[in-house]
Image (cartoon, rainbow over all chains, first blue to last red; front, top):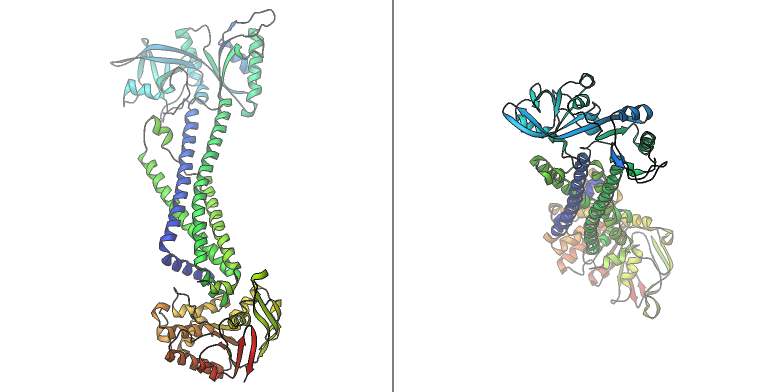
Amino acid sequence: MKVLFLFRLFYRELKRQKKRISLTIFALAWGTFSIVVLLAFGEGLKRQMIKSTHGLGQGICIVGSGQTTKPYRGLGKGRVIMLHEEDIELLQSRISGIELISPEGDRSRNNMTYERKSLTERVIGVFPDFEDLRGYFPQRGSRFINSQDLKNKKRVIFLGTELKKRLFGEEEAVGKTVMINSVPFLVIGVMLNKMQNSMYNGPDVDKAAMPFSTYQTIYGDKYLRRLIYRPKDLSQAETVKKEVYKVMSQKYKFDPTDAQALSVWDTIEEEKLMENIFLGMKIFMGIIGSLTLIVAGVGVANIMYVSARKRTKEIGIKMALGAKKRYVLLQFISEALMIAFIGGAFGILLSFIIIGLVQALNFKGQVADILAHPVISLDIMILTALILGVIGFLAGIFPARKAASAKPVEALRYE
Amino acid sequence: MIKMKNIKKIYGVGSAQVEALKDISLQVDKNEFVGMIGPSGSGKSTLMNIIGCLDVPTTGEYFFEGESVKSFNHNQLAEIRNEKIGFVFQSFNLLPYATAFENVEIPMIFKGVRAKNRRARVMELLDRVGLAPRADHKPNELSGGEMQRVAIARALANNPSLILADEPTGNLDTKSGDEILAIFESLWKQGHTLVVITHNPNISGRAQRIIKLKDGMIENNRT
């Protein structure tokens, strides 16, 4: 009886105070809409940014040549430290904490020809591990360089997404032969398109990768441009980095505490920083959203308060007829909760529609790629529902307590 | 039925204090029809509110059916008002957005009577005050006399032992007033106890006993 009766009361109240209640519902719907959309776009922004950060690779260190800044065992500072091909094997055998490792040699301005089309492009020489390290994932029906290619110095090439488009257009590339500086190469794979916001020597989608052994037979680099490794355990990243310095310092004779002796790009450290920034962003947006909802909540409380005053007489009559305090409390709280619920439902519905629309339109372009991919996540929903519930309850409880604590005789006398 | 001993009621504090009831002792027995008269400001309504458990006395003892009201908490007082007392007000005090049927139904909802039983009882009561055909009308579609009859039906909802009426005919024309009076008389004959504040000599003439108040004291208590 109770619930049905309350619904009936609320419905009557709605009819009686149409304007006031619908305005409150609108305020709450708007507040909910704001917070959900705000957080959804924020979450989308975060995911897209993390995704594009991972375009470079996840949890990797990129090591290149450097210059010493500290004197060491009679050797002066300012010596240039260059990496060599054999350093890869050395590091692999000496440091067990390294999961994947690959050298990377690269040359720009290579002539690349397919049929009548001729381009000037960058070529890199790498190990099979490079696929995982740097996110060179192949499209369906193609593959990255494997150990056989490396062992047999095969003339095979893996094309970046954009490079493939420039050279082949919409045509199938895998299995075709391209000429690189007049040497024929078999295309074994095309890269899956990826977003990448941090890079060196341009985006990966514009590069072509071949086995490191093949690269060396053609170009014969004396020094290694860079090597890339990933530690087995991200929490051990610092230790592994220190070990790399130690091993290299023994070989090249520099102070292992001399950070400049090698140039190390530590994306793990960067990622931690990014995560903090995103956490900060999330908290910031959460606060803005909550404030919006609180404003709406004040509106609800206001309405309920006025409504309690306006209905003092009615409460008095009900008390005279035997309504207990908890009935009055229940009436007001359930009314506020119902308003909060309806407003919240409308707001969430509206957000779903808008976000669904943005997702369906699938905007393309540099800014849109980052911005226009809102995501509604579970914690956003839970947070919103929680805040709405609290608002509904608080907005109900104060006027309800006031109404319920009135003496029946005074409430009755109220006109 | 009710018994009062040295009841005092003081409103306000300090120099602004008003002594609404000075020293009231009275007794109303079961199935009595008591009229209460007196000029305005004499404390009739205050006394009525205390009898009706809508207010509590400042000092003094009030026994309702042998039990001291002082010992009751909010909920118990609400239960007494709900089940033992039926109120009839001068200004009817019907809920404006509810139909006659729903107004009569409310005390039963508070008591927790099941919906099926409520329906039958509401229709029986409305029939008793001659308003069964108007069950679906809202107060603003009823005349003053009809509204007061709905209020009486509501007062009877949980079959209370005591019916308290505060100027029940004050807002009505003579004809409607007489109809209300006739209903009161039949209720009295059915065994209800009635305490009615009134200026209407017709009502006070039919009452068994008249209590006359003046300046917060009982001036006259005659049969």
